[in-house]
Image (cartoon, rainbow, N blue to C red; front, side, top):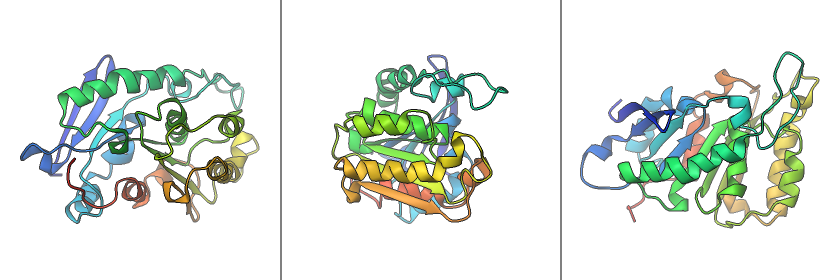
Length: 252
């Protein structure tokens, strides 16, 4: 790793902040990707990401990984019953969590790092429930997050398809990347059995609502089921970034 990785606590939140190698030289500013689950999607793949940076396949990026508190509460948009009696109900505190990201954490990162702060240079991404809450951010903060990444997003969540059908997307320039494995939901008998179908529905809804195919991508991962080992398959996170931030751009 040639970039700088720092573990810090800001406003009671544990963060993993990665600065690309070029950050140490000159005064260039960089796009920022806010990553759920403490940044697991990038922490395990920094070397391969830096190799893509060096080849100008992906723009040089700052990553901010946010460790969740109560994950099943913060990553859900509204309360919902648990999937089984072994778990607590989902708390539905996603609106408050995203308010913290948009109105407290992002201003702090923009003040303390050399960022490109505009929506087209700001993305939010996560896996599973982290992908669900990232998609929710597209609706709540379209003027903040211009890039949305959902890897194996939990679109099975009760009421979310209805929300997408009725809610408006205010930023026509948002880029939305949906990624799902073809074996997701296999063997499930609860709402999660519809993971693949619901992700396809989410993509269709976005197109029906007027999102341009140039601004929305559905990637199907052949043979991939649901779980961290699949989320971190080589190239999966990188493909999302390459679509959201392709090539090397001159800083604005």
